[in-house]
Length: 77
Image 1: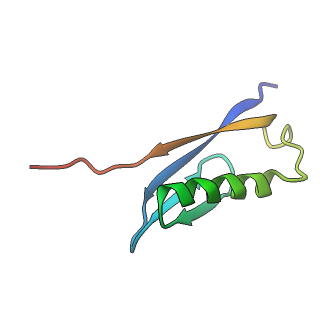
Image 2: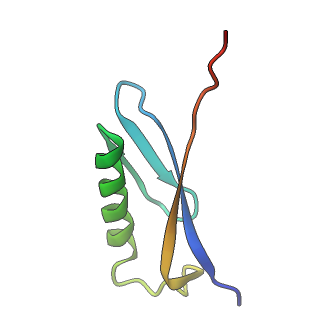
């Protein structure tokens, strides 16, 4: 069985303010007023989600890497 090495999170602007991050492979969603706060919250949320879990049963290596991408709207003239 091939285990995944990465967990992917997509960041997009919040509806009112700040930013929201949503992991694609695991049930983690978090938010932050700034990108720095969001990254801290995302790291913590993923760590708590994986705490006491057998990551292999979830399809991941023991310490998967978190890859974060940003969703941006293009600027139109």
